[in-house]
Amino acid sequence: MSKMEPLDGSNYRRWSQKLLILFEALEVDYVLLEDPPADVDTTKSSTSDTPATLGVTPLSAGTKKSDEEAKKKYEKDNKTARGHLLTHMADNLFDLFINQKSAKAIWDTLLKRYGDDDAGRKKYVVGNWMHFQMSDDKPIMEQIHEYENLVGQK
Image (cartoon, rainbow, N blue to C red):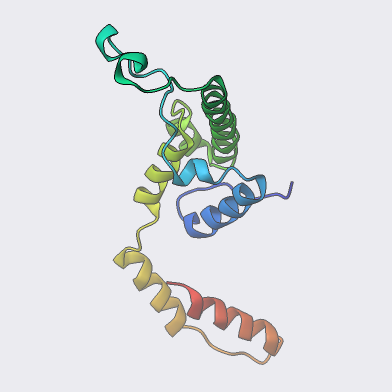
């Protein structure tokens, strides 16, 4: 695995995109974007509303088994995503999120906290763009890439 800078708050956009690429490759990105599957045994039927009295055939064992497998897969993938999120954070953020068990909750909280473009960031980017100058002592292609990076920031 390649070395990745930990999230420190100022590098959220790049950090989140790199982790999303990793999660897509691991096929666990859905845990950040979708709600967890509902618990299979959350409802209990009374004796008057049993499937037999309603004229409905009970769920097959295969359906219950596949629901249970989906739940186990989600739990495993959530642990994987949560582990990567936590290990790619600066220590102060790690300490804040270590007790959070849901990767989606961590992801959503980070998005709310660092994902919004604020006026201060835009002012900083515009200031960098306005102070950019070409120089004779640097290769032209390096300066073009630097300029493209400034223009591409939002």
